[in-house]
Image 1 (spheres, rainbow, N blue to C red):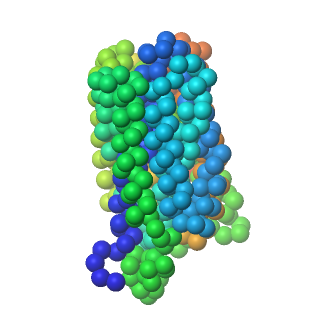
Image 2: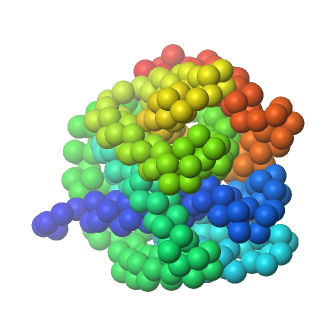
Image 3: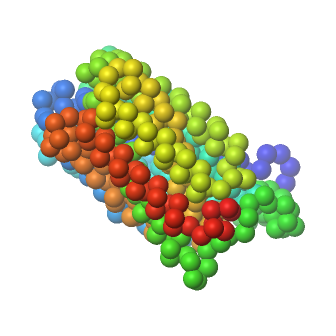
Length: 406
């Protein structure tokens, strides 16, 4: 087959999907928290608890998403996600009572589960071997553009059109883009349906030219490898989700609403730079070591905010945190893909993602309640730094020497 390998078209489609998935899902939650509390006068803790439902629902169906993509291909699951996210964004702008937020975020959770890391990784994984890290990084890189453009777009739409009309316009636009994209491009389960091998090459190329070391998981170590990465990323990502959700809220008193939105966008820009760095090194570097380096950067940023909460530190630490943020998200499935291989990836990462998503679902409420209990965001972020350090240690010591070098 001549021309561009179809797997790269799948990557491009997943890149666009990630823009909307992260822009309206994960990063959008920060805007929903600020906009809904401002519009209705509800407390941050109350709205944070409702937003946590979005993560709980996503966690509950991660396994179903992975199995569905493995058995039926990506199109059914991602179509469901596109429709669910579009409707949920519209409905969030129309709530009148706090209880109405819960079904909205249930629906948003379905959209997030089917348009984020697990779904995108499972969609891309069958198409590549030599370029497994690069393809996943490129696909998930759309998340950075979701942060760069999604938050300012949401804030602008709400400011210009009001909460209800603004979110309605954004939700309808997302459906108009995602539904035809998924339907037209994500038609195949993998290269075999097109008579191709992974990477678009022949079997000899795949077996003998891959720069990635052999998979290290076996009957003796697979449980330790999987659980160490699962626990580590769960601890780190629960704090990362909480940070992202509360980013606008804790930055607003220092920078104002517009300034906080600009900071979130800038954080997305540096996350993109972090992913570009990862794109260059991931296929030939020890992925656990890369993840630990990113976690160290986040620990330093959280400690800085916790000890020195002023404008300069908040801006600088947010940018440092953001540079590592995209790498953490990408390396979560990359570690499992590297150590378990393409064939076992769906079931292995599906199990890991269920735990990770369930734990991270506590992120918004956890940071919100830590803020209330400890008297502000700075001490809450010091607690987050400790949790991130524990996750880093688990990831480092949980892998075998061979696994760390692979």
